[in-house]
Length: 488
Image (cartoon, rainbow, N blue to C red; front, side, top):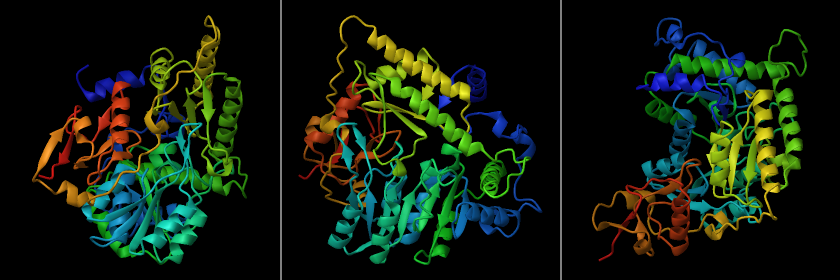
């Protein structure tokens, strides 16, 4: 086995089950099994051009807009990343100020760098008991816009990686009252709005630009995504110009066909609400899926030590996400992750400080969900049968995992573009210095430290904690230090 294809083939033939993206979960019942080589073409006659869509691709994008209740929708073959970049660059001018949720994906920070923007950060609320970052408070948005009148756009992520949804309707009202567009990274919410069990899409609640990753939570190939445009506060031509610049000039028809097939499935589920035709293959796919995962949640209430955690407001939480907490169990999240992977062959989506994350989608089979249920109940029972009463491991994660608020000394562009007086220092010796590097866990890809920020003792303690617990810190040139700007 010496190439990628062979390794993928061996893996696909194994019994490892995916509780991670892509959302199709390699479930061939949801996909056409045609060889991709048979349909891999370029912009030949009759197949349109994504960058100048006038035929079949224009029609497909218009259908997607109808399904998602958007004014206009663009196919993305470079993932949600290209949608986020185009949305931010298309709504700001060089040097503008932008209000940004600090838990946004790294692509948001790349857009801030590219347009030399001055970010003002919003920090999500934090549930200390559960060790979970929650929503962006609309009151914090209001306060930030009043204190920083030069803000030209607002960018938040909803839902978060862990499934937390903010009050988009209220936030949109506040943002629009200040004359700014609202951009929502809804990458993890492409399935929203297709069953009452899940929250509604940000398109419904007034967001101006919404980005969905089809491949994360729906049956679509990796890299497939959508950018929705709404209202009249966005210069649509400018957004489209950035899409043309940033997306490949050779968009894959395999990926675009995957997007269109996924939209067709979604359209069918909507039509069945008023038309119960028996030949609709997918007519009940979301209601049946919701029933399966709700049954799983009820079964997992039997857990004594491991816990499935979520926010209290179920109207603003994505229950497709299973956040499995170890805060009350005598094991670390890393131990649980390894047991699920190596003993039960269940691959989780993410390992965090006090929990692991299992992603479910319409692509999950009942057998797969049963395997997760049985594994967690068995692990929990083993804890219960140990001699003596097991005590929960007291997590010493600094700030309980809360994102520390760091002083912004320079913009990202000012910090990254400085080449003089740059020095690599150990984490301890970097305290008080200005970082010229990012430091983040991936996934989810939200920075702990951003270039231009003054490094604090708390930030260094968090970095050390993650390293000591075998987490990989990305964004740094080396694992044993960070590049900083030295004054003098």
